[in-house]
Image (tube, rainbow, N blue to C red; front, side, top):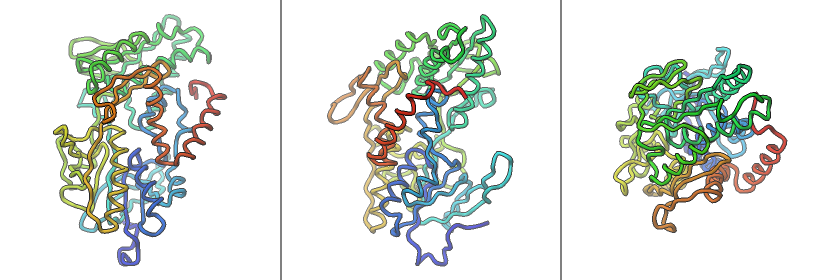
Length: 441
């Protein structure tokens, strides 16, 4: 099997940092490391199964058609060229700690041809940032009939099916499109609101016979007693009130027992008609982590210390959704949120820079800054936390929408700098002035 980097010449080569996973945290980390260390002090390598990056919290907007992914995608190879790191495309397959290499699966194109062979990639420091995948909780029929929103391809698949269903219904009088979203967390709530926005816009693009509120029925099903159960009750109740004004049905305390091709069944005996079913009810760590020989917690995450190093190997780090990092202040682990991955990426940038200088590593401490939920153009709600606030502060309206908008801009700043973010935002705004409000193809 080919090996990237000849270890016989290791004395003549710079320290090799390999980051697996180009999500929000992983890409921010290699960008910062490449800018500071990638011109000789270290060799920085990013490994990801995809060729492009899109901020995962935006996938619900892609699914609803309110965002064209082509305008927000970033080519890993281009980012590598601009920021002095190397990109290797392929899926993580295994780990050889003794020889300090990872195994990457062969890259196969859509026609079944091998573009790149299976490879061993050598590392001096390894960082795992492979995120999370959908957890169907072994629900019968879920994997076969529900669409998850883990990847861009899934979001695009849902959008195509949604528009096709609406077009068919438009030419069949008294036909209703039923969309069921399983999971009342941030993804499910935000998707439901964006879908309502899409339904109201589609009439301007040819679906003139459909009533957006009557003919497109959207239902959110949540097993917990309330939506957004991880957030303060006031945020949950306000969100449910806003969804009600959008004619979005909310069913709480309803556990899904089975998903069929055109129906969702609940444990209480209800059967919901479903032309499209979205599963947004939970996440789990990728199964490949169980094949690496590293200690895992009960959620399948790699167990790390507060330095983000694994318990058994100080040369292997993990962060983001795939890592179980202690949160001593709450006697639990750091939650799988975008803000946590962003904080950990910034921490690791400084920690790895110190490590290369032979200095001791600091400890990571998570700062919960609150949570925001966007209801698209309709509204936004959330809570702020931190030393300046003193306690959880409920916010909504323009302030909440501005802060939610700023979250993605801060991600762009980490990737492109302030000037690049500003230029890109202006260009994106100008493009939207001449583009349809919903992506139709």
